[in-house]
Amino acid sequence: MARNLTLLTDLYELTMMQGYFFEKDRNETVIFDAFYRKNPNDNGFAVCAGLEQVIDLIKNLHFEEDDIEYLRSTGIFREEFLAYLRDFRFTGDVYAIPEGTYMFPREPIVKVIAPIMQAQLVETALLNIINHQSLIATKAFRIVYAAQGDGVMEFGLRRAQGPDAGIYGARAAMIAGCVGTSNVLTGKMFGVPVMGTHAHSWIMSFPDELTAFITYARLYPNACTLLVDTYDTLRSGVPNAIKAFDRMKEEGIKLGSYGIRLDSGDLAYLSKKARKMLDAAGYYDAKICASNDLDEYLISSLKEQGAAINSWGVGTNLITSKDCPSFGGVYKLAAIKDKDTGEFLPKIKLSENAEKITNPGNKTIYRFYRNDDNKIIADLICFADEKIDCKEDYVLFDPTETWKKTRLKGGTYHVREMMIQVFKQGECIYTSPSVPELQKTFKAEMETLYEETKRLTNPHKVHVDLSKKLWDTKHRLLDEYHGE
Image 1 (tube, helix red, strand yellow):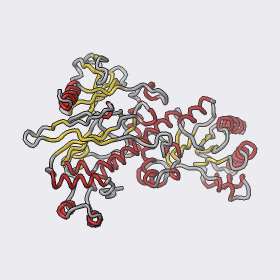
Image 2 (cartoon, rainbow, N blue to C red):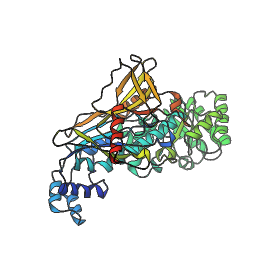
Image 3 (tube, rainbow, N blue to C red):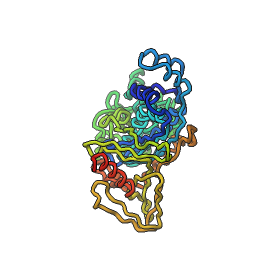
């Protein structure tokens, strides 16, 4: 859904733009990289999500008359600058890692090549979109992984931090493997399955629990999951659910997908007891769904305890990524085009904190895979004009502990360039896949990761290396800034 989010920005983006307008060449072409420094939740990777909404942002980048009038009312902006904004559009290039792809710290997620004012303006909203959806997609992966093949439903809308967080958080969760969402608007907007059961209020509104169950089963025989903990799960809820299933048999109503939902109590104990009761009644294919403040750690624990649960409804802890509520994406200047030569001059940000020193220049990413099992070896950040000949030996080295090296023998590996072009001279040349298609992409991507990288605690870290050419350039710039 396209919206004009041009003013969804920090004030300093606009004040810098006005400074560029009056004090610099407003058409000076620059490169900015969006990237992050640490995987959320201490995961082994992050899941890229949000590119479709970034595309919508850039496509619709323009100032309405009421936007300009508002900026005028602040008393900060001069009339010449405000007049310029009337015809403001994005005319640059954008490269990005596709959605549904895993990614690692320090490598560019999005690269913007554009006149400096344009590249500066998109920073805040771009980060807002990518940071949020990548955070929720990564959290969703962890929960889906913990479920070990059971279906995970996203149930978080009422606990999300506002409508957009609920809508686009559910979108991100679907990309990372959830089987459905309770969010009807997300279902409509992105063509994903919507799912749900009923609330305790449904049960309480009837004279008794059994009547409520029978009524619901008649209405929804193909999606009949009955909430059994309103009064007493084992003494009342499960027995009445079984009676309702029996009544459907008697009435000749065939149940499609059916079962019970547990929303409180000791889920391991109750699910095992409920499974025995359902099986004794002949309902071997009845599903047992659990909800109630679930996350990947609780699901893993319940699995270890032998809980008889095969469907999970996860809300608050997923949609808010409660234990890791932010994704640390940043947006940094990487290069400026020389007016005389047309070449990009690399720029570097220094810091006393080594991980905050940026990688300079116009860059791309190559992902190295083994030929024998198609599993990832490492990612390589290099200059955009560098090419990899997979027939030749290639030496990867740690950019910090440079003595750590891996020599890949020619013919034993293959590479994939990770960044795709999305905008060319202001025109979008990329069609975003549907969310169901992105979910398939993500599932295929997961097959290229070793299990050690997927595990929830202390995952194996995939190396992100620099090419020799980029490493040399980075250290030359460091030496120059230190007068060496």
